[in-house]
Length: 303
Picture: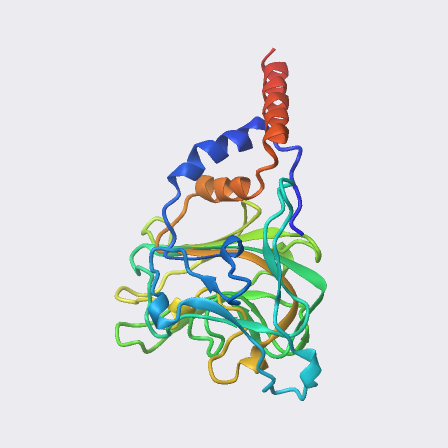
């Protein structure tokens, strides 16, 4: 389960939860495992772009079609874990066998080209992390000419991780793709972590920023020509290992997945840290101790 973390956090983090977190915009797409319908086996989108009538619910798949002759018994539905009672644990899905999640309607970009976007997810990669073939987290895994939050190439044990950022000209042609290798910034296996990606298209930035557990970890320039737009498949955001007609080929195991959100806009450093801080809120009694300890530390420093 996702247990309590960062118990040595100072009062500044506690204050961030009650201030900046309250100003977070509503995401366009939000998949929060606290809303998992265990009986129905699906997760509704609680973001503002809620078009469930067209299929934007995450639904688990068990397809066995694949490109690597993997035995059928290797596939199975992800397992829902409800989390702890009062101990800070969060609900999550675990992919103990090869599986995938599918939801959304393709070919409908939801991001503003002149502004950019933000993606935030909470995951745990276990030592057993393994994929059938080129598995993606977020976005229909079918072509490199799209926006993908996190991609694991090849088949077999997952050792390399990348993130794709893509824009096309106004006709949907001539894609410009940045394929960032982010393996080195990810935590060790078996550790829950927040991954945040900000594509900042403002004139003074024109860059891609990656955050781990609220902290800036990597920055890459991204400066497409004027008139370029985000294009296609973006409404699949949050999908795990789906490629449409041959989803078994993109299945994954050894992944634990608790939350994903996509924003049509650029979240600030403070908002990303507040998002992480709010996700790690301990029990009220522990929060009070942290706040008192942090204030005491500040008094000692200022004394």
